[in-house]
Length: 65
Image 1 (cartoon, rainbow, N blue to C red):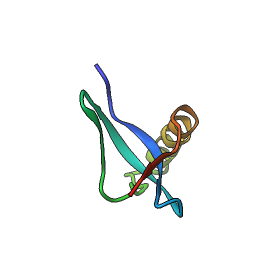
Image 2: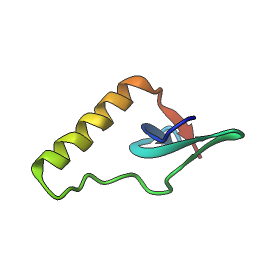
Image 3: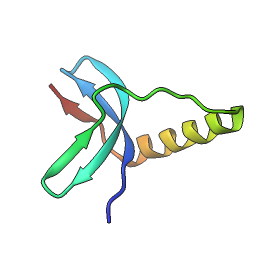
Image 4: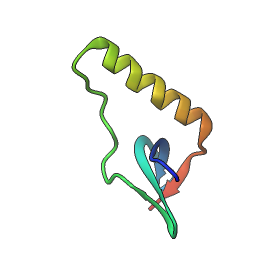
């Protein structure tokens, strides 16, 4: 079973942003807006940032229009 992950996406070859990507049987889906980093504590923020950094290293940049 596939799970969502963070991925750097490039819109029109210009701007980069981090989105949540959801792998599906017939292609990927992703959040319309880039993700923001929020949390109820500094530790929550650190965990989110570490997850983002790990996923950025794991997944290639996805181009979209």
